[in-house]
Amino acid sequence: MKKTITFGELLVRLNAPDHRRFIQSTSFEVHYGGSEANVALSLRKFGVDASFVSRLPDNEIAESALSFLHQHGVDTEATLFGGSRMGLYYLEKGALLRASKVIYDRAHSSFSELKPGMINWKAILKDAHHFHWSGITPALSYSLAAVCEEALKVASDMGILVSVDLNFRANLWKYGKRPSEVMPQLLAYCDVVLGGKDDSELILGIPVEKDEDLKSVFKKWKIRFPKLKSIASTVRNEATASGYLWQGVLWQNERLYTSSQYALTNIVDRVGAGDAYMAGIVYGLLQHSEDAQRTVDFATAAASLKHTIPGDVNLASLNEVLNVMKGDNGGRILR
Image 1: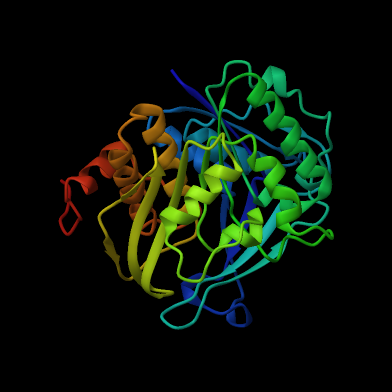
Image 2: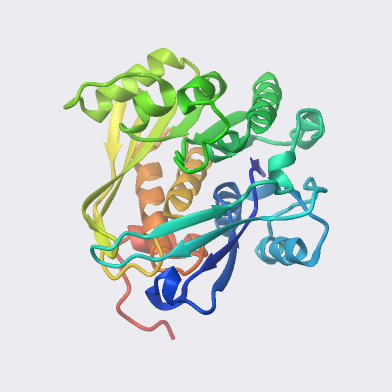
């Protein structure tokens, strides 16, 4: 079985219940997640052998978070223990015209204090077919950017497929480096990337014209990063915090493939939708790498289902995603 390794921070999410504002809340709901952990768990739901690598404190909160991953079959054997705290983030869910809001509390977390040389990447990646990371990790510290490059060099030398979600988070880049000063040297190792037109100049340092289309933008990315084989993106139209039209895009073999469009209304939880889409792209590439249309259709259906599930993680099964692709959009009770 093809094995995927993901690397990132496992987080505690505390969200205000019932779409309340922070100032209204006297209690918070607890969820566990984080972009790369979300991808690993979603892949396990699709039957892919997936492992998650991180660093956590040796305490009961970390144990609870890991138990959540174990419950769904994610292997965490390579995770390190040390430091004193897990990273947190607080979520205020938006509605209609009011946007959602996130407050991070990740400084001095166990993961943020990782340094090059602490992880034996050759041992961890020895049986892997695929390695996944995201732009959130190098945003946290200069040392974590170095750890990412350390892992990417090993993965590249071993001929492992590498994917990245650019995942720009403005509130995390606080150590004096712009994304465009860090990310391009890391993208050079990647085969698959998830990003959009807005990321081009901000993250990759590649300018685009105001009305330039995605196909032209992605061609520029391919020229700048020759190793790239697939570039994925998503499109949201007529958007409010509670609903929008959702569509997936995949650029592969000089062609742009687009999925069906889904009208998502009364969204339960949009956090993690991008991770669900990334997992869907990875699954499609692992299972039928030459069928780009099927890959983008699968990923878009998977991410659409995530919008119906509370928490960070897409808990939809493979069959549920396949049923959505066939046109089964709910509205009945399964008995």
